[in-house]
Every structure is written in C-alpha cells, then in structure tokens.
Amino acid sequence: MCLPPRDADSVFEEIIQGLSEKEREKAREFKAFARGRKIKTVEQLLRVVMLYCGLDRSAREVAGVMGMLYEPITEQSILERLRGCGPWLKAMVMELVKVEAGVNWNGRRMSVVDATTVNGPGAKGSENRIHVRMELVSLEFLEIHVTDHKTGETLKNFRFEKGEVVIADRGYSQAEGILKVKEQGAEVVVRLNPQSLPVYNEAGEKIDLAKVLKEQKPETIQTIRVEIQDRKGERKEEAYVHAYRLRPKAAEQARRKCRKRSSKRKSTVAEATLLLAEFVLLITTLPPEELSAEAVLQLYRCRWQVELAFKKWKSVLDVDALRAKQGSALAQVWLYGKLLYALLVNRRMRHQFGEINDELDQERTATWWRAMALTAEVMRPLITGVEFWPRKASADQVHVLAERPRRRRQLQTLPDEVIAFLTPGVSSQSKALAL
Image 1 (cartoon, helix red, strand yellow):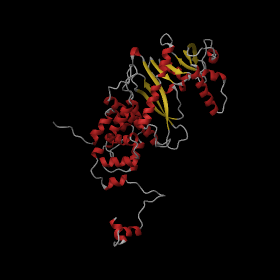
Image 2 (image 1 turned 180 degrees about the vertical axis):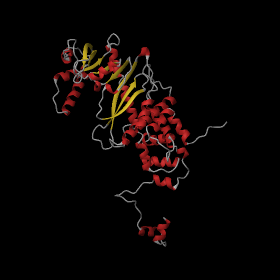
Image 3 (image 1 turned 90 degrees about the vertical axis):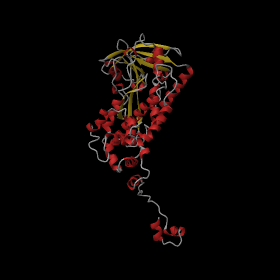
Image 4 (image 1 turned 90 degrees about the horizontal axis):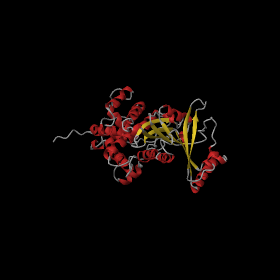
C-alpha cells in the first residue's frame, strides 16, 4: 500500500483544513499576500501567523523555523509580512465562527454576550477588548470582534436573529442596546443596573425600585411590569423586572461589597443602593407566560459559560499575552491571529474528543479544559514542522537564530592570560585561532 507523501506542508494542512480555500485566497484580496518571494504560498504565510500569534514565537524564532523548513529569511522580512495580515485574519475569524452553531427548537436560539480586555506590554489601563457572542447550548462562538478600549460593552456591538434570546450581565444594562435587540426581533435577559437603566410605569413615570421592593421578604421573587425608553422618550418597549431577594447572610455580604466599592471611589453609598444590593435584579422582554421568573433566574446563571470560555482562552492558549504595543499594526495581527489559532484548536479538539458531553441541553459529564490543553500540545509540532527540520542546521539557519550582542553587555571572552593558563606551551594567537 502506498502512503500519501508526507512533508511539512501536508502536515500543516491538517491544522488549517477548517479554513476554506476561498478564505485563504482572500490573502491576495486583502493584499496580505501579493507574490511569493521567501514566503511562496498563502499556506506558508499562515504558518508564519500560527508561529508568531498562536505559539507566541518571536519574529527571529519564526524566521529560524521558516529557514529550517524552506529557505533562509530574515526577522525583518517576517515582520513586514505580518504587518499586512490584520484585515485578512479578521475576515477569516469572522468566517470561521459562522459555521457551527445551529438554531434550536421552535426557531429559538439562546446566546450570551460578553467582553474581556487584553493589554499590551507596559499598559496602564485597558487597551483592547474582545467582544463575543456565544450560543448557549453548543457553546460555539457566533461573533467575535476586537476593538480598542473606547468601544464599551453594549448590545449594539452584535447582530441578532429573530427569536433569539440574549443573556448579558449588568454592563449591557442600557436602554439603547435593548431597544436595538428588539428591533431585530430578538429578546433579552439582562442583569439590571438601575443607575444606567431607569424603568417607567405605563404613565411614563420613573419607578423607584427601592421603594417598591423594600417590604419584599428574603428568598422570594417579585415580578414588576415596566417600560424602558430611549433618552428622548420616543421609543418604548414593555419589559419585566424579576427581583429575587437574597437570604440575610448573602444580603449582608452584598451590602459589604457595595460599601467597599464606594470606599474605593471615596464616596458615600446611598441607602437605596444598599437596599438594592440585597436583590438579584433581572430585566427581560420575555413575558412571564412564556418563561417564568424562576426559569429566567436559572437561565441567567448559565451566563457564566462565557466567562469560562475566556478563562480557557487565557489560561490554556495565552490569549491575554499580547506582546505588541497599543496602536501598532502588529497588535491587531496578533489579536486576530491568536483568535484564529484558538478557533482552530477548538475545532480540532472537538473532532478528536467529540464524545465529551459538554452541551447545555442535557446532563453534562465533562468539560474541555484538559482536552484543549492536550490538543494545543499536539498542534505545536505540526506548526513548527520540527519533524522535517534538517539533522544539522546550516550556517545561515544558525545565524538567524543566534542571539545578537547587546549594546550594554557585550558577549564575553576569556582573557588571553587565562587561555594561556589553560593551554600551556601554545601561543595566545594560536589558542585564539583554535578556539
């Protein structure tokens, strides 16, 4: 039996086969790949991206690996090719997340949205945000966007389908975003922040939630029909606030946290704010007849799955280890390249360990943490192509990988007298030549 030819490119193809030929060839459309020189194909350029972004190799190390597999290339050439890849990588990430998750029962889809920050070296505050929309049954990603810190968390960052139910934390408690979701025919379940999202009665009067909820007993749920409206009061939407009052011990802990946050801001916390801290407040556009208050509260707890996804990305794949400085072309390249790598790892992992029951519509038996870590380890040699490195590196390959002398610290050499001491009877010049 004849086995198919095995070389570095065919092995690397195993990793990128999730990317269609059409998406790869967009490298020419986005001018990431114009013509082959040292990097002769789009697939070789993708290997450069996976080495630099996925495995976090330095540009010099990438040049060394490419030289071992193909022909010598300089660190500067690697950086120049990478700088032009940002828009192309963004397009591939957006295309890859469209493939998997399907619509659930009765035309409904459950999704959760959130964002996480990624900062470059020396950052003093938030620099970049990764915004995601994830299907809550299959835990597949539906949208991924990278922005700077000026783009905050809002439901307006995403597109939703008719009949979709969107779950989000209190950072998305904004009238404009919720109204935008409703315009698209979708529904929301959002943790209510009364300061950023005031609610009104049918007469258009603002509801004092602290006054309404003051007499509610611990460990009970109260539902209040409300209206939300835009800043001008022109657009209105019916909604429901489900208020669960915590048990006394949990309520005291919540008040303590509230006071602590206020003390950090050097402000005094209002009594109404302390009272509302005792409640879990959710606002939803779903009527109680369609989904009860108890079910909505339980559904909201599943929002934690997107936080776990971020934790896996950061702890297993180092998605938060951005090396490029804010504003540089390499920052966008690294972020989208790392996300592309994360999606390819996820796809290969699910193909390899597909028997793991990790979907939320049935009893779960395991999660993907260790499977993801092992998959990443399996992919590493396929990306570096170490199996196909020459047995002995050439002088050019060694030169690319060798460390350069630093300006402030020159490479050391033994003094001539010490060399003479080590090899008596041989002249210093001869010993130097021998060394």
